[in-house]
Length: 456
Ligand SMILES: Cc1cc2nc3c(=O)[nH]c(=O)nc-3n(C[C@H](O)[C@H](O)[C@H](O)COP(=O)(O)O)c2cc1C
Image 1 (cartoon, helix red, strand yellow):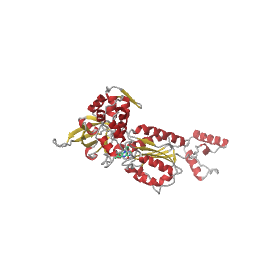
Image 2 (cartoon, helix red, strand yellow; image 1 turned 120 degrees about the vertical axis):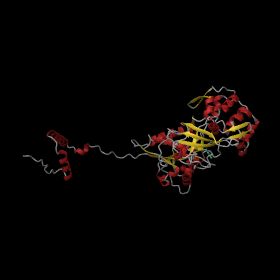
Image 3 (cartoon, protein in one colour; image 1 turned 60 degrees about the horizontal axis):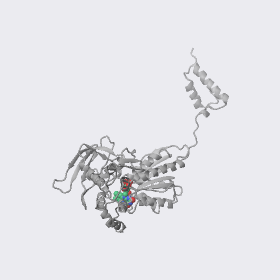
Image 4 (cartoon, protein in one colour; image 1 turned 135 degrees about the vertical axis):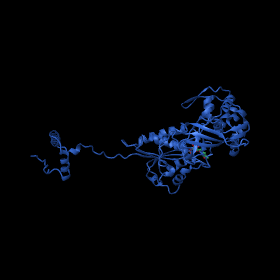
């Protein structure tokens, strides 16, 4: 005769728990039943309800929420904002990266910590993607921001009269709206990293200090594009293979135009119509040799700038502008050349005349016209970093797959001392097919470089 196990009603348990107990014990052998019985007896002897041994939810710690907002025309500010975002991800509770035109303005009043990374364009204008944001913040509808803490990194070019006007304007305006400045705004010139890197470091220090203990980390990717952070950028260009390099203008045409096909195969780079490709050129060897000869140096001198040590030849070949002259260099050269004409030119208030004088010359011309003595280190330090040149992409990925095609008009201007070639349009035609050229194209650079009439 088989015995049926019936669990009698247990007054301490409600119906649901009785059913649970029946399910738990059903089919168990004697040893298991004895073990459960002993376990329950032990709990009863300690007078501790079983549930008390389960982990108890700890009171929620309010996460520190940080917004990194950027406005960028050609990708520089975007890249620095991405760096900041990446650095902050280990520091703050919730960090979001937002392009200015994707920022919901109604959230501004609720922000607690805001970092703005923004370039200046035109004659002191915001980049296109930040026009609305700048208008809103500087306009009458901007909210009081007395609970906000902020810092601004401006990107610009000191040769423009309105150097970093937008970064400075936002910095002053946020303070006027009652926000507390965490630390002074950064004024990055063309050598962006020398200002941006320490500025990012300071931002991280401040966030670390603001963070409540055990604040969880939540990372929000770029709200505007949803893209992951990129591998290739200006300082880390992709070494692309040049597949085709072909003259397409008529042989008797005075304007040389070339068709280039660049292989982006294993780069992971993508582009859409309107994107531009950044090419990191090298100065022509003949120009570098001429400059070194005019300085009376050998080219093998070792020069240290920051943490980087290179030969003078290497600095001038791949890392310093020799084709674009700028005021700062002329000022420093004037002290060495002791040429009254240079002094008069610099003292002249006619900015247009000075600019056209600058544009007609390259570094080599000035050294030739007004000889002056330089040490290798001082000379490199006086020059500006060699920037990538941006070319509108002439192909569609649907048609060419993992390639980018460019149409490049070779810049050949007659300067007062001979022909002047543009650094990149001189570099590209010299590159033979199946050679690798340094392309700094990336989703960030490319997609941020929607080709506008203002990017020339
Ligand atoms: C057409 C044009 C106009 C510019 N105007 C200014 C200017 O008025 N003031 C300034 O400081 N920088 C000016 N710049 C320099 C840019 O701000 C600088 O190159 C910056 O790094 C660009 O950053 P972005 O790529 O994020 O836009 C200008 C650049 C271009 C191409």
